[in-house]
Figure 1: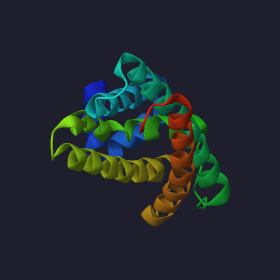
Figure 2 (figure 1 turned 45 degrees about the vertical axis):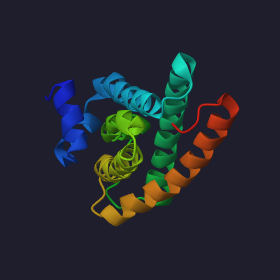
Figure 3 (figure 1 turned 45 degrees about the horizontal axis):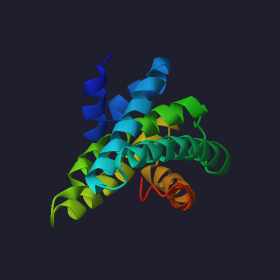
Figure 4 (figure 1 turned 90 degrees about the horizontal axis):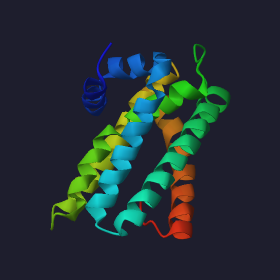
Length: 174
């Protein structure tokens, strides 16, 4: 079994085997949650907004969003768009999706003039690609396109939720 750091690096490297390992490790939920929080904190620090209260708000919004997105992905992937061999539980999705946030730690460089926005954008796209892999593995899909569809539907709902939470708590952009 890989260490936490090896899992984070493997997830960022888009290693499907790491996502499989995390999917089956029921003890990895705290690790997945830690990855989500680290990614959110990096985004908060990179944006240089809100001080300590802003960092806490960004972390809370990220955790709640991750939980909702995980459940949405579970429902969409197992009820709306399952394949014949699809079987999963919400915990498997939460663990794999949590680790798909690993590239988000690069958002800590968001404050760098000129490059910060580019780095944050690249990290965000990287996270979405990682999530597609995480969903494909957790739902036992043979089709990456199906995983992409599940992620796209869930992403639209997640973005709407994140925007509402950010407006409610004044925590711009988790």
